[in-house]
Image (cartoon, rainbow, N blue to C red):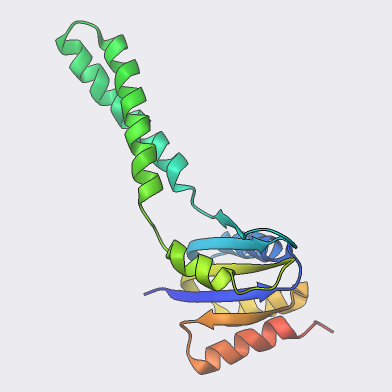
Length: 173
């Protein structure tokens, strides 16, 4: 089961920095992220979403490779595997990109837009879907890095949410 955490920051680049720090912690097996999204709200204009998993690109790559394979197989039937491979790759990449664009993996995009739209101008927010975390070590590192923010919404228990809010509200000595 995954936990959802949404944290707002006063600066537009802080959410990116926190995500970078958390991504580095994944290499140490301290946290396992299922999905993440950075929301930036410029001083003027609409919010900008930066998804951790670009589904359109992933769909195009996987669709293109499987399309090339199946195109070559079908092309063998017509004694032109190269043309089949090229046509299959094109069709597969197109359908894979469309499927990736239409699918919604992880955190719901409408939820991200709704909650992200509530942050103040010239700020950012970080949306995380976490499968596994060593909370004490991750919170200690976030506190040491000096990231300041406030919790918008979580699926954590009240005690866990209070510990998170305390960690991102305090500075290290």
